[in-house]
Image (cartoon, rainbow over all chains, first blue to last red; front, side, top):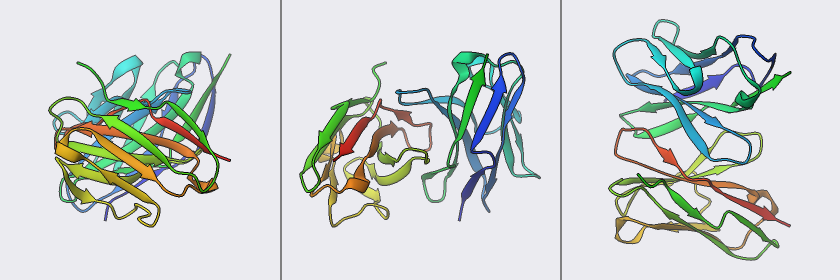
Length: 113
Length: 112
């Protein structure tokens, strides 16, 4: 069975600092990996996805993530955050054999001035 | 392209009352999901449709929750009767099979 673990429930950072939000998954089959963002009082939006090919994936708003198959990780990074990046970030795994998106519990990113 | 539409945006009801949510997916998307997102938690899949057939409803509390997707397009999710612990945001999403899901804005339900 697939599972997703987001290692940090809350990440406070100062504006313009770099940030990494960690995501580990477990699966015995090949997967698709996603990061979604939920801004306050808004629905979920797709930040980026890994389906195949290059392991470094670039998304919207300056975010990127790297798929590491040996470590079964898909960490999200941004070199310099803004106040507007304050949001809840969700890592999700889609495994084609059971056709379900498995969600992590989310990481709350708080960017402080 | 138009996104996933959900209504209402907000709903407040008393416990033991009934409530229904509506979702209109992106045109052409065969797969439709209903998620429940309780504050501080990740979204939990309640039910997944492929066209008008149910693919997965293993986490749907069937004694009080029901969902349908007539004609394989719009979908409604109903709770009858509601409990306090049903207070959450109910998200609808749609996708083509195996592709990224697009989410609606959600319906925030408060049960008092």
